[in-house]
Image 1: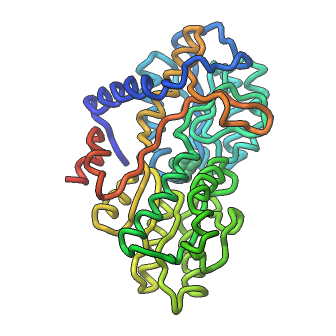
Image 2: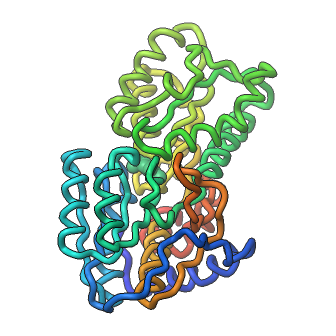
Image 3: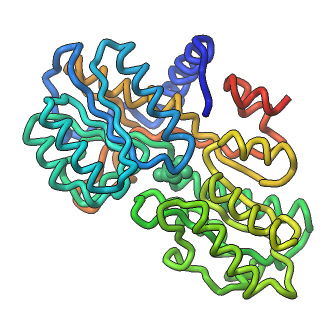
Length: 365
Ligand code: BGC
């Protein structure tokens, strides 16, 4: 797990300020009138943060950053993981409402299963912020803060093409597609972003998905679990790659990328180009060692700071900044969002990309 010293945090705050300036270029004025016009609340109020399971390093980092950041700003922080699953997360959010939380920040396990608890939260006057993952089919979500998920997928799709081209100048290339967990609203957005780049290349014959498994439903990895991705890769290799070379694999995140690479290695096959996401320590090491091809930098410090920034605005009775008021329709409403820009990282730009990350910069020397 990454730890950040004071200098790192100061750098992150400076980076956020810079980000806010650029990311708000489109306009800061998109705040939706339908969002809760909070009248402000006491500085030491309870702020609930409901996190999902620890399916990737970013969630573990978020826990510490929310605790430190909220307490540092004078709030009373209640940060919970729901390792037991959806019903545990439902209970945690209800408990936050009962304790009188003024803002509830939710990283949902399943964004469509919290409708009752979010309605309770709104009835009690709390503001609800969806964190990283959108909350679906409910009017009771006020803001969304996340990295641009569609862009993440676009960057992954492009990296897959670039990586394969660098190894072998022309196609056709044999590839397989993996997606995240279907209960996480992000998983389909990542996949759609990647397919916006890859589908035209499948259609024109540059890419050959040898297994034929091209749809999201066929590509999903339940629970974002490494063992599920590894098992599926084992099966795909055995059924489709006895006589063929696998050139590339679209992997939606680093945990799954490493599982895919483990499967390929244990089948005694050459490692294909494998994408990822999250800049997890073990994947950055793998990239520097020339195994995993790419990851995405979505600095958790910036995302947590942005969420806390929203809380501070609400506390002061102001409207939080948003920079996108059209992209995230949750099935009931368009949720005003603040989207941060993801960055693609390969061995070629890792040193620059992690220059202000005290942990990851050490791995790129
Ligand atoms: C996050 C990813 C993460 C995945 C699994 C997604 O919702 O956006 O960063 O890899 O969950 O934890």
